[in-house]
Length: 118
Length: 112
Image (cartoon, rainbow over all chains, first blue to last red; front, side, top):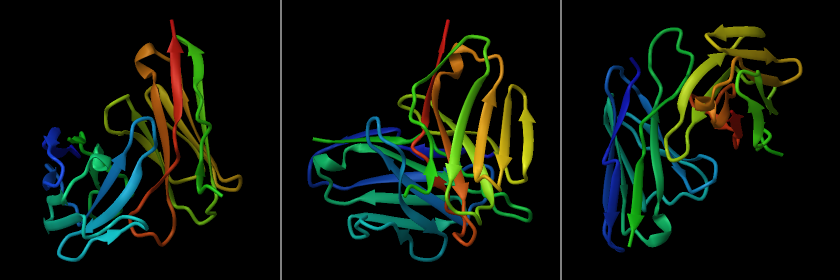
């Protein structure tokens, strides 16, 4: 149980285009999902908290108009990188935390999406 | 001051030995504590979590929590080369909804 999928696993796009990344919880519901970014040899950086049915909460320094998050259902959140530039090239990882009574708040991570902007 | 601190390593242990990974946190109201393993180029994988003082064992892994000292550790018994990875400590603070704060990770190398 507790499987999170991400699609695509790898994407290359041209500078100025937009890229959408999907994150799905396959066997549990998640009111809250999280989006992280990780540059090579650096630690995880939380970008935003995605809330089903409401606006995402962005961390300080993350541009909400550039990184659009939509959490349309209890099992799906999407991250759209708009007008991507080479400096946006990174490893984007989503996570989800199962809901329910007695929840312990552990997060399960998707396999990640490696974005390269040329 | 970092909220969750880990020694970046690398921590090198011989195969079969016990690896001890440590983590300290600053928020005394923290509720839940997590250990993740991350292989190079992959996403983090949950190993175990703990929220009560004391030890929690799962196979070769033991998590230890001391809230008075604001300290959580992970012991890996009979270390294997496949355990070589970066180990991330994460903490859920009180009142932060479900957001976790991650340490920067300790790189473990298990040598033959």
